[in-house]
Length: 166
Image 1 (cartoon, rainbow, N blue to C red):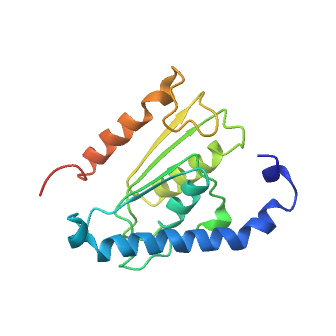
Image 2 (cartoon, one colour):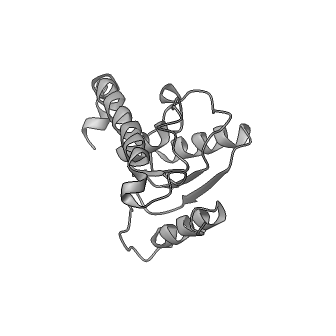
């Protein structure tokens, strides 16, 4: 957390972030190529990530190929500045976004910005901004509304058709 506050943090992280995004895209491509082996539907491959992983997940929603295009994306309290974004693709994947207003890294605005971009492009998106939860609420039970974000995610996956059998 302290490193993120240093003035040269973004400069030092930029080359690493690019490699991480490439890994996210490669993971989607790999799973799709091996879908039959894993006995999964190659048209239901999505990506979820938390914090830096949320950056990777959200970034896969831009500049993809047919092989590494996610079918759904869920960045959770992601760092996603405009510099990592591009135009929203015409065939953009549905996006589920969650964050907490009291995120001590100040990332709630990144989630709102990403949602706003999807909304402006008229692409499917769902946004949950919780008042409390901090950065890294994940599956940690705190007896506050963030405790149920995973149920909202499951509801959303059902809504977009990812849970029904074909």
